[in-house]
Image (tube, rainbow, N blue to C red):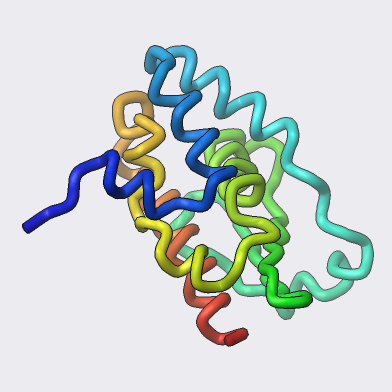
Length: 149
């Protein structure tokens, strides 16, 4: 028995549910515009982590160099990304995941469905090859959270 999209959305933290709702109400073209807006909003890597980029995990499935660092502070998760500005698709998706998952519990991150990109409707606007990279990004994020708990 598979679970439907609305049941999957319900498994997401509230902040991510809000973002998903915004995307679901948009046309595929508007979704790409939102994705670009999120790409511009991705915070820079904190200076304390810039020196440690070589120690960060690289998401090899992405076409562009994507580096990820995860921290657990007071029981809440925080994700940090190093993604070049010339990679707006993955930057935008990372920004969505950061906004939707930062400051949540590890359990909330781990119960988030792996296909958030599908819930956002990005499969209608992005090539399958890029979708594989987006899928891998959340898988890596969850794996890092599992290592921290």
